[in-house]
Image (tube, rainbow, N blue to C red):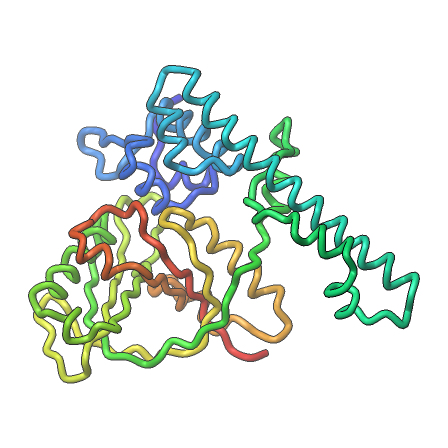
Length: 326
């Protein structure tokens, strides 16, 4: 197989360019450049490795454990990782079975006695209380899937978001860094980090917030795209070039927290909003130059900054999708 471009990989494997860059930062895959060719390429080994990563992610294997598997030639490492995940999946399956049985018990009790109130049933029935006490926090693991079709069905079934919050982002004055490059997130982040440190912004505004979005979104067959990053500042604060001072209107958003790298959850969040009766998308799907109004908020920005940690590992992001009442 000939080497293929980043955009070709994203189309074939349905993975975002940003996720590819993140996997490269973790050392899971590598790209290269042909002489006289501007765009990054992936060879056959990188594509095979990427397919392995995607399958392991469908099996709910965390990226740190995937690193261990792919960086070690010893099968014992993979066996250890898989056994640990099997144990977690068994725990989750047992917990979910318990939940189902409790719900079935509640249904049967209520069907038998129409005059029994559900509050009394849940708080007084010893069998139900004992079953509830036996619950353990379920981990989201999947024990099904002995072939790709079953695995994909299980992945789809487990993809519905259950933790979406409706939040209001307050209006704010922001310092903005905008970079168009192959690694715009990192370079925009360097500009803002330097500004925050040199201006003492964290001490002056300890409630600062940190947002970002594609500007513009990646396009086919291009090695570079843009990213704009904001940090909220006092209204009267001066902003040095190349940063610019802007005003963010705020508003209502659907919010879903992800660990850094889980950008596939954007699609899940969009599907969640589309399924709502009370809310509608308030952005503009045609505005690809500004990520359609979507935002990403770095939730532990100050912690990373104070620790001098520029690596994305451990970063938590809120995916933010603008809403209005239906």
